[in-house]
Every structure is written in C-alpha cells, then in structure tokens.
Amino acid sequence: MAQSSAASHDETAPLTVRPLRHPGRWIGGAVVLLLTAELIRSTATNPRFEWDVVSEYLFSRAILVGLANTLQLTVVAMVLGTVLGTGLAVLRLSPNPVVSGMVGVYVWVFRAAPLLVQLLFWYNLAALYPSITLRVPFGGPVLVKFPAEQLVSVWTAALLGLSLHQAAYIAEIVRAGILSVDPGQREAATALGMPRTLTLRRIVLPQAMRAIVPPIGNEVIRMMKTTSLVSIIAVPELLNTAQTIYARTYETIPLLIVATIWYLVLTATLTVLQSSVEHRFGRGLERSERCPLRALPQVRARTTSAPPRSVADESRTPRVKR
Amino acid sequence: MRPLVHAVGVRKAFGLHEVLKGVDLSVEAGQVLCLIGPSGSGKSTMLRCINHLETIDGGELTVDGLHVGYERRGDVLREIPDREAARRRAEIGMVFQHFNLFPHMTVLENLVEAPVRVKKEKPAAAHDRARELLNRVGLADKGEAFPRQLSGGQQQRVAIARALAMEPKLMLFDEPTSALDPELVGDVLGVMEDLARTGITMIVVTHEMGFARAAADMVVFMSEGRIVEQGPPKSILSNPTQERTRAFLARVL
Ligand SMILES: Nc1ncnc2c1ncn2[C@@H]1O[C@H](COP(=O)(O)OP(=O)(O)OP(=O)(O)O)[C@@H](O)[C@H]1O
Ligand SMILES: [Mg+2]
Image 1 (cartoon, rainbow over the protein chains, first blue to last red):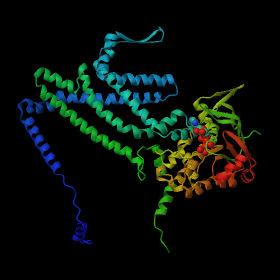
Image 2 (image 1 turned 60 degrees about the horizontal axis):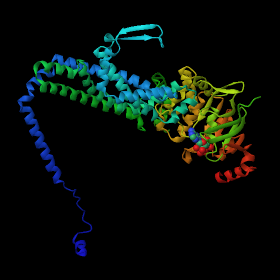
Image 3 (image 1 turned 180 degrees about the vertical axis):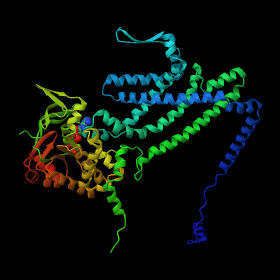
Image 4 (image 1 turned 180 degrees about the horizontal axis):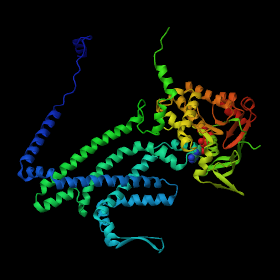
C-alpha cells in the first residue's frame, strides 16, 4: 500500500497547497446577517420607535444645549480630576507615611462609594452644613463664611462629585505611571544635583506620560458617559434634557434614542481622537523615530543650526575625487 | 591638607544585613582610585554613600571637607534638607553601569539639563560647553540623536559627558563598562583614561584590571564590607599580601 501510493505521485511535480475549508463559518455568518437584517427592518418599521420624532429632536435646540452641557461637564471634570489626581499621586508617593496614608484613604473612599451616592451627598450638602465657614482651627476666629445653598448649586455639586471621584482614579493611574519609570532615572537626576521636585517635573513625569496617556484616554470616554448620572440631581445635561422633554410629551423611547445616538457619536469621536493621541505618544519608543515629548524647544531650535549638525551633513555629502 | 574624599569607619546596613562594616578611605585631589572586589562586597554601596544616594549608619564621610548629606553639630551628624544635599551633590559626578541617560531628551538636552536648571547657567554657554564635551568623547555629531539611537558604548560616553557638564570636582564610576559588548569597552575606557590624565579626582569601581594598571594611582580591594588591602596598582595587582586578594585576582585575571 505505502509503496504504491509513494510511487503514484511524481517526486518532482510542484505540490498544490489547499487551505482547510470552513463551511460552518459561512453558514454562521449568513445566519447572523439574516437576523441583523430582520432586526433593522423591524426597528425601522416599528411605529413605536417613532423615527420621525427622533429626527425632529436630534438637532433640536434643547438637545444641543444638553449636549453642550455634557461636553462641558466632561471637560471640566476631567481637567479638575487630572490636576487633583496628579497632585494626589505625588503625595501618595511621599516619604511621609501620614500624608501617603491619608491619600490612600481618599482614593479608597472615592472609588469605593458609588458615584451616584457621592452626587446625592454633595447635592444634599446644604442640608448637612447650613453654612460653610473657613476659620482658624480649634475654634479660632472666622475667616470666610458662605451659605451652603449658594455655594453648592447643582452645577457645583455635579462638578465636585465628578472631579473628586475622577481624581481618585487618575491618582492611581498617575501613581502607576510614576512607578513604571526606571528608578535609575531618578538616581541619575539626583546624582546630577537635581532636587526632588525638579527631578519629578523634568525627568520622571515626562516619562511617566507614556504609561499615563492611554488609560486617561479611556477615562475621558468613561467620564463622558458617566456625566449622565448627574441627571439625577437635575443638571440639564443630555440625558436630563431628554427626560425633561419626554416627561412633557410622553415620547420616551424616541428621546432615549436621541440621547443614545449622541452618546454613540461622542464615544466614536473620542475613540478616534484617543488612538491618534496614543499613536503620537508611542512614537518615541521606536528606535528610528524622534521622541514626541519635546523638552527645551528653544534650545533645540538653536542647535539645529549649530556646527555639529553641519559636520554630520558634510559626512553625508558624497566626496568628489580629483 | 585634608584629602578630597575622607571616610572614617563608614558603616551601612540594609535591615539586618551589614554591608559596610567600617570603611576607611582617603583619596587625594587629582588621584584616580580603583575599587575592586567580589560581587556583593559593598563597592556600589560605598560609592553611593559618597554622594549620599544612600544614607550612612555610622562613621564619617566628607568630600572636600563637607559631609554631603549631613551637617555636623558637635558629635551628631544631622541629615540636611534635600535642596541643600542636592547643591553638594552637584559637585560630584556619577556614571552608572546602565548609563541612565534621559530617554525623552536628545543627547545635547541630556548634557545641558542640569547645568541650566541646577547651576542656572545661560543656555547658550551650557550648549557651547556641551558640544565641546561631546567632541572630547568623540561624539560631536550625535548631539541631536536620542539615547535609544546610540550604541551602549556611545551612551556611556554621553553619560560621562553629562556628568562632566556640571564641572564636578570628583567623578564616581560604578562598573561603567560591565553592561557593554566587549568590543565597545575599549572606547569607554579610552575616554576614562584621557579623563584621568586631566587631573580630575576619580573613584572607579571596575573589573577591568587593565584599566586599573594603566590609569589608577591607587587600587583598593574590598571584601565583605571591609577594605582588605590597598596600595599602588603594581603592588596590589602583582604582589598582593592578603590571601583573599590573591584568590580574587586569580579569578578575574
Ligand atoms: N537597596 C538595597 N536593599 C537591600 N540590600 C541591598 C541594597 N543595595 C545593596 N544591597 C545588598 O548589599 C550588598 C552589597 O551590595 P553592593 O551593590 O554594594 O555590592 P557590589 O560590591 O557593588 O557588588 P557587584 O559587584 O555585584 O555590583 C549586597 O548583598 C546587596 O544585596
Ligand atoms: Mg555594584
């Protein structure tokens, strides 16, 4: 048997390579497409979705204002959260155990308590503290006094809740970023006579950015969606605006679709932005590419016209033999 | 005159593990001292104590008459604040086994960072000197490159130039050629030998006995946290008196 099969094919003829067929995949794909088409058809033709109402409200003034508010909340909460979170991360790594311990408690509390609870808490702060006074500790004289209702307006409550919550997450991201930098970098800077804060600002943080930027991008997208929670304390952002409208018109499903469409658009936009930012930050890691984290730009501008460059250029120009 | 580096009975422990058990060391200004010894004998730790990258647990250590990280009040050495220690450290250059160049800066930026930010030199002046130093280590055309684009030997020469940019009165080297491919070691040792001839004070932890023989004024053999033997390279490397030195040299030579 073996002999006859060996003899039956020509040793010198080229062999044909045939990939394994997967008929199951084709059938599975066809079924999924069919189901999707049916879902789209029923959604598009089902009168309860009221697509005409959706298109009526999608670009309506009220919804666009709500959208702008959502964006504003996202940006402000992210900026405040990032600034505060970076500060917390630095303190968390402080050699003082009391300081780093307190930051640890902060991070634990603001990550462990549900954001919804935190928002309700800040909203109701007015009830807890009839007024907020700033005074010298241990019963000293009063320095400043605010009535709480005025200070903790719904916007302030929303921003306070979102930023303090976000700061706790950012603090952990930045801390991990700082710890990801080779300790030899800090040592080299220290050995050059750079004080601790200068080392952190010029050497450690710029390098930590590579590890920090991608997760912060995710946080921006998460925050954009999380802002919908503040609808509960009547901040007129996208979801709250939609709710206000359907409370009046009872067109609940179409208005929720309007809000969903905008959330999808924002998420898609931010995802595209995020990948381009990440691409920029990843570039310095490649051997042949320039690092995007530019330091001392004025210094670089000077050096491009400097002698060493022309020496290098000279060596590249072909020599003419005589 | 007092020696530039003066250590008396320096002790250092990590937890219960005593790494330096009373080290006495004197380095005169302009001398090149090579510190040799088996792995774990405390050479790096001693070097790091000299510029206060590590605290000491006992004894006394001065550079040019100053305790780098401390202030002496009567019989007590008090640790001084970071800023003050940084100022004193700025006068001591250090070169590490793994170069530790700043990867997010070009070579020139690596060289001018500390002079401009710490010594508040004018950027233009710092640049001129940086270029001079690059020329001296044979890398005049690499100012615009990033550390990642250089070979290990080139990176280490940049690291030497970076330390020299602060115009230190003492240079510390911790196994500067141990992480290099053998064919790149020569370039770095060449730069260090040139440097030794300029009259700067150097303490070099190394396993390169050829360098010790050629450039050192003094060789110190350390073992288990103590100095076992010291003297001119000829006598230590060729006629060691201590059994432990002989055993160590037999292994590395
Ligand atoms: N930060 C630290 N924490 C704990 N132990 C340490 C620390 N640094 C060094 N040691 C220990 O101290 C001892 C001496 O270390 P050191 O690095 O000074 O040795 P060395 O002579 O430089 O050795 P090598 O030739 O391997 O570099 C070693 O046993 C080491 O494990
Ligand atoms: Mg060592």
